[in-house]
Length: 367
Image 1 (tube, rainbow, N blue to C red):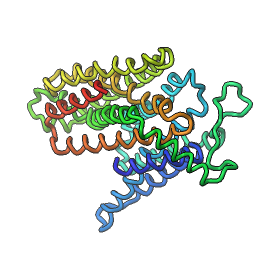
Image 2 (tube, rainbow, N blue to C red):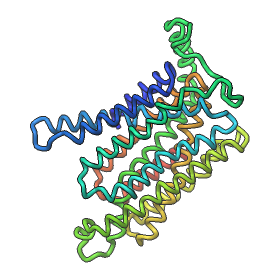
Image 3 (cartoon, rainbow, N blue to C red):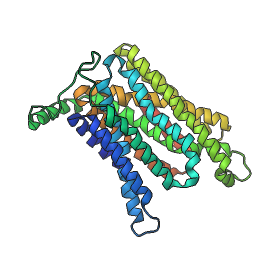
Image 4 (cartoon, rainbow, N blue to C red):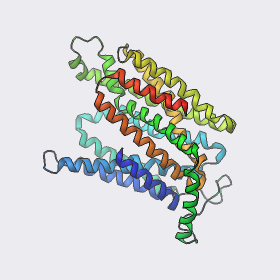
């Protein structure tokens, strides 16, 4: 996550300079190469740990840093403003669907070892990028009546210095707008919660699954427990996809002055659910724990994704949409780093963890 912060800053500048297509291809190629190299690092060598850390940082730079900022930049060039929320909602579902698909499908390949799974992931990344290489440009055909207006880039007839001076002027206006920092704070608080559940929902569900077991340690390591918790955790991302579509639809249909209320409709229940989990922790029936985690995904993903994919475009405009997305991305990663450090310190103390998440969700409601 630390490395991906630099990736988001770089992606924002590059996308606003030369367009998102180049950055999308750079992200896919860099991720594929880094992932394959990561899978080739031998264990036990004197340089293995340093190589693992460096290449893991590269994967974060390309996959978590460059990719999403570039996708927002490129996709919003193709989507008319009146349909931005709905269609970007569909685009925003891709990471959630990919996560759920990976959990459901790659589990069958785990017996081949993690190195094989990493190489499969690199191959898939190359396959996904191929249509972009062959068919998709930075903008739709100029003859398309529905196409949004194009903007000039750094590669236009203006000198690079002139374009950079205009960019700095617009950037100065953007960073002095308090609503930018409110959006960044809201996005970061939602993302920190999302990351913790995305990475540790299976651990939490395993604890609930083994509630009352005679040998808890053995139960947590049992294949049946791992399978049940992994399958149940996929509902977290699947309901998140539904949430993204719903929030995107409401964003387009409601008058502009009521769009913020849409986020409150989802974030307020999130606060209540996390308060419930703070009180009970993993001491819940497995079915109730799985349903609660799924509801958190429903309340969480829509507001977070629409913030980064749609509200960032409204705030930054066509000229600074990628830069605005990058600002929000830096806050996202800062919150994620803090949450992961906290989880490492607290371990399995789910009551305290959910208490911290409840406080974070209150920040979201306040924003």
